Length: 419
Ligand code: PLP
Image 1 (cartoon, rainbow, N blue to C red):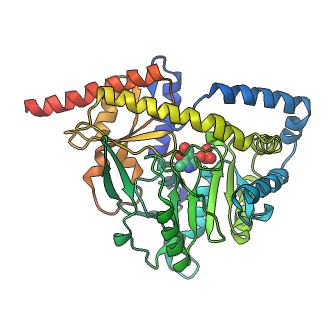
Image 2 (spheres, helix red, strand yellow; image 1 turned 135 degrees about the horizontal axis):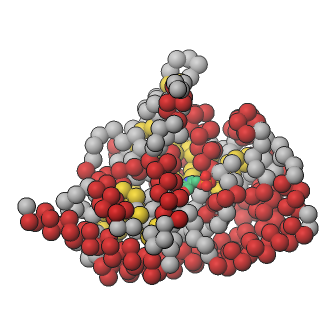
Image 3 (cartoon, rainbow, N blue to C red; image 1 turned 45 degrees about the horizontal axis):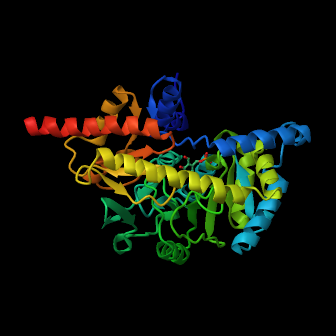
């Protein structure tokens, strides 16, 4: 069988596919400690809430109504209207329903947007997507129709007390050439839990406007929902920004609902792409989200249930890590949001890819760091010294995984010392 060039590119076994495979396999393997994937936590209060909400929606015919009809290609009208109203009221943004399109998960929105603004143009030139701060989300890495669609910039590293550190955008070396068509940043960042500061975001916004390219802010974990953000960060939206949101980290990844908030022209483009690629986005997630907004539950649950849950988990996980791994063995990126910890094993004698293999053999899944540098131009040893773990499972499982991690780190050091 021979595939097209598109087929060849999109049938590759990529980092994201391996991750989803690991996740699937691990979820079905008894005893496996899954610290690899991005599945959100099964928060008991949220599960109970969804159970009840879905029951009521079913009784009222709202679920059947959603399932039995196509929405328009821009996505469910009632949600676009209620969400626009919510965002204007809560954040003072001048957004209305015309500025919102829905997609089947934000992952498919990135595919649309990257290829809308980067790649070959009619005039023969081509553009790239710039990630101004790597490490950046693994899910972006293979979403380009053209090869080499991405460039990313190395961060500055600020060392902090208690064995922590924080990445910053290195504005002194950030080059935005003629070939950049889109700037993209996740805030909070997967994999690091970093939240770029307000000052950094404002500078990026100004640079994007100056170069006449949109700034895509991936807000999958941010405010006002799901609210998995622990530092002070002001949300930003204006006509030059494209804000992507999602219902996934609220606890509804199976609903595959992404939300794009952007200038009308971009929303029209997304709407037409939706029509061509999927007729219309799925409608059950949007029906649920609309119901949550109407009941006043969306922001309340984000603030009162989801955020405290993850904050408590992250504190607990850091305490566990520190019981097994001292600062000279493992630095931790300052956890400011999202559902991951980013660990830096500065003097580890093996790469984190090898560490990943060894951990996997012992039933512990984490993700080696080098996947998270899409488009980094020059080799950088740091990319092989880091590892991402989620802190979603309960305390006992995390401790089991961390114990194995510490043993493998010690083993690697001992092997090296014995040489
Ligand atoms: N953006 C980031 C930073 C993520 O970590 C994820 C999922 O893990 C997504 C987007 C994808 O979300 P969705 O389920 O809406 O496709």
